[in-house]
Image (cartoon, rainbow, N blue to C red; front, side):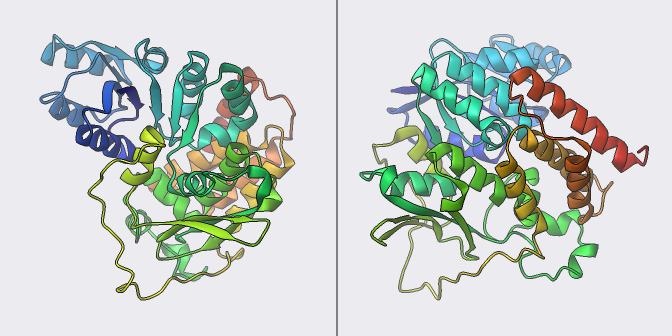
Length: 383
């Protein structure tokens, strides 16, 4: 039996991971979970489930929960996340935290010898070199949960990475794929969160609309599969049936297909090479009307190229780009910033902070905070 902990259990990936665990009690067990501020969800959840440890974000929440569940062990805050990520009896840590917050707990889990099922792509986006060096140093297994990287992972089985000519990452195009650039000026938060194919958290849904999420997936693939950027391509595929493809030197292309269901890559990450039953919707090829593809429109999705170029430039550029994106997206979600100004503030931050090659964790943490303060000041009009 594989024993896991879930960082970010009340989010979309976390709740679906809990569902996968519940379907396979002989193969999987969850020892502990963390959540952020979704305390009402946790109160209801703990009526039916107990864990070795539960981590919450704030001490006030911990005090409230201890009164309700005196026989449940709780912890809180950044150190609580690290304690959970390094839990002695855990074999694997599912990192489903949102954004930059996943970096330090993931690194500590690796250093504690835990395998990683990675849904937090920002961990590799901002510190891919550090993370992959740690994975090699501590001999742990890092398996992606993203549907695109899971597809590539599956399409590589039985083949050599040396024989790959390119990876082809598919993109749905997000909530606004049918809108013109002019129409994007007036879009609202509610419009952006209405993704046509996938049920995801709010931050990743906005990143899907701007195609920042897809740029992050290209960067993540670069680190996961140790391939140069010129061998990683992106194609818009609105149906989200083909989740990604691998082309080999002989021209053969292996694709992984399936109905949009994040439980599939979650289960692959936790259980491969074993394949377990799952009540996912099966494809009916006779009823499939079409599988369509088109190139990424750089005018419509300018942030895609901005992010890729920052990653190619290297050094600490993606720390800047990611922090600026997180602050700008949050400002849009809280209706403090128009949609198209997300890109304005990311570009402004990249111009403000010059590249440094220092990739120490201390520098990354300090730079992340400095960029956040700068972008927030810009949004407030202080700068």
